[in-house]
Image 1: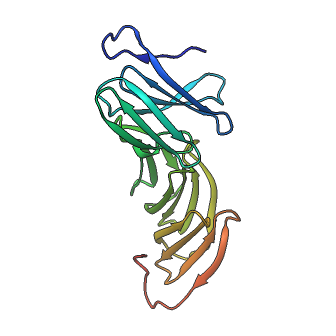
Image 2 (image 1 turned 120 degrees about the vertical axis):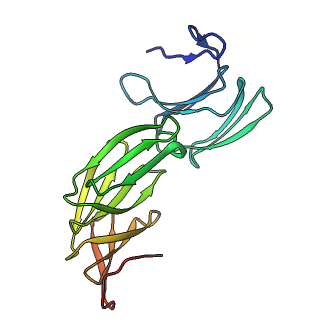
Image 3 (image 1 turned 30 degrees about the vertical axis):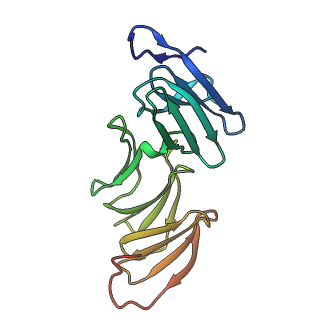
Length: 215
């Protein structure tokens, strides 16, 4: 499989690639080219696929250092600039946003190219809040349908539906290192969820009305 960078000076021809770095364990490669761009590639697929583009340099990228463990890339170019980038699991996570809506969905966006990457469908009523792990590309949403949903953002798929609240779930806070999410609800309670076990670990009582905010 052969892929190319587009030339900055000649749109019809490929740009020279100056650097290639790869981590075969996570299946991710990074290329730097004369067109001023870095690209990330998923090398685990049958066809080599570009999954992210870094486009801030104005001239050829000539130096690149990558720490795949920390999801960091430092690049230098002929224009005299240095840029520090953040990688997701296999995409340019700094260019990804996730939104929720009254239309019962969440959406994943490429904010660098101003396009929708996919829709997360499954909730039966308005989606109120979310918490996102951009390194692992996972997300939890909550809804007026009384549920929380765990999503794989790369596959745009629902991994789990977590039920337990007796009314709409208003807001979330996540601790992704510990794989825990705290939810608040109109049922006057807070619930602590274990994302690995995908169940409620604890319910907190005490409020005499709807819980509307977490901090």
